[in-house]
Length: 281
Image 1: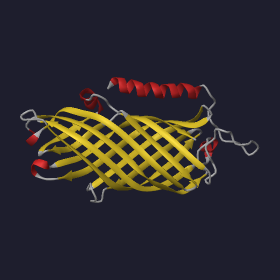
Image 2: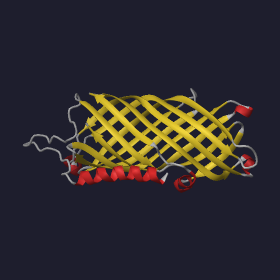
Image 3: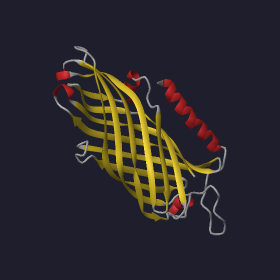
Image 4: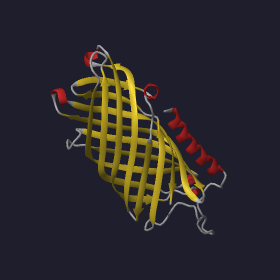
């Protein structure tokens, strides 16, 4: 687990060292041609962005597998102590042309928590879950606005996007109630989602990013949602515009299926700080 964290951290550190070795990207003046590494300003042009991040995840909520239920309330430290690895993969690819873009956003995790509330709240429960999460869909850019003040010296514009698509979730859940045999159960399901994203320059080379979605609507989950907020610093890396960002992310589900001995429930919120790097092409 710690090796996974160090490897992800080292990759981000290397990218940061490369970034500070070159001049930060700045917007062109009226008398100068735009710099080659500036962000695309032509909405009719093709654009692509790849993002990877470390998510220091905790979780809270209720779980059930093979009829054995329990409650989980574990912060990142608790998860870190009980897990074999934190994040094996996390990344997002977005490709667009004009006002339309497509995206795929994936995460894989193998995490757990010990000493949680077991059946009836009387016994300790050990929870382990291996999960995958893939968001996918199409985005539409509602608007692009020129920033003002110090933000106008940077490379970004204010953008507002709306999107729709799906969230594929797969969870392999293992519960050890301590007073009986360990049970395990796996489920996979797809939920529709609708959301929006706002990118807002606030100072030269700095911007805020807000994103959220809601879905499920009883199709698979009764409800699923996600929300993230972060601050980013724009620079150039190897001649390409890039961003180093930090923020907070939360994803929630209210999903259940089956009954009796086959009952499965994943009523969980996963949340925590994140640190990432994105590169635009």
